[in-house]
Image (cartoon, rainbow, N blue to C red):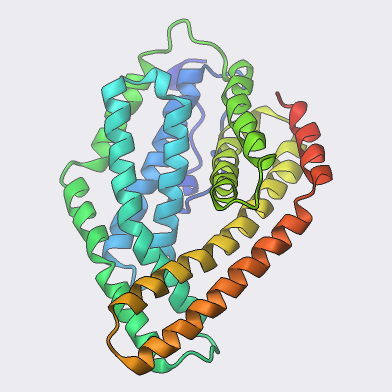
Length: 310
């Protein structure tokens, strides 16, 4: 299959931040798949960055989708880094990290606002102050957008894709190589899954490894049977969501602790202390609930199902 005959990528894949990239074939060369995966993943970042910078007050999903797009792009770059110059990989990773860090705090306050502004017993004064902190957290997103927009985001992507395609001579078919891309990510996931999850560091590592596994599965899914996407992928996504919910409460606790340390209002401090206690309890309870379901049998079954794709 020549470059001229490559099937088109579904246009909505970028515009909606789709998890799947359409029109790919296991028979295509690795470099051909890489060019379109990287184009779609980085294109999504370019699409959501101006929306997150300029229109986040219209839809909080813009910041949320920006963070997800960055994470997906990071995993794509890791998979296909061998087709790029090392300096280019480092520069891309650095830029994506700065975008993610810029969006992190804003998203954390968005999550808090959504939770506490809907039928919560939290006072309206606290809700208004959450909104103020959220507005302050917008500045880093605007700043990184101004820097990157000046660099012509789309033009850089096109240049990168051309560089990747220059490695097409003698390259292998993606259908054969997909196993090699998936295997190390699965191995690290199960290493984390079988560690002592009562330790904070191990629990956090499992959340990160689950996320990385999910985003890698999205790239290679078209090579495998339908059960990979329709049964195995949803299970991994469910675990990621459960781990993410625990992390949301841990993050809220961190934000309230920082807020409390800077507050000089006695009434506000007392209220924040109550919120801290509630977040701590929620985090502990949800974590215990997850660990009760994360049994050796569940892990063993998951490992068995992945084994057929390795």
